[in-house]
Image (cartoon, rainbow, N blue to C red; front, side, top):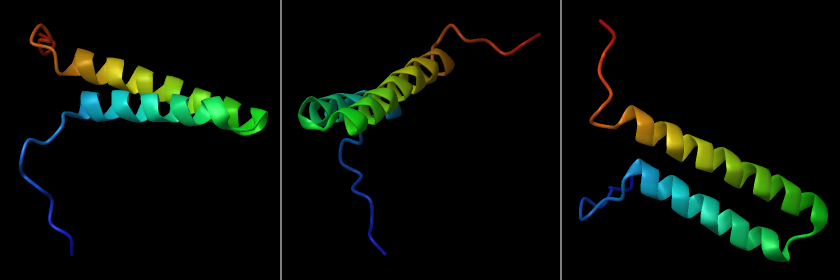
Length: 64
């Protein structure tokens, strides 16, 4: 079993943004059908990053 490195882990938001950026880079050189799939996945990751940001914000308060 592989152990995780505990030195300076990236936040979920940062990992999602980086993955979306990497997919956009791959999409630049991919064939059209794969390009569309990669760009759609990058958009999904952007949405996930936005939702994660909202959920982890300091202003978020539990319902009363």
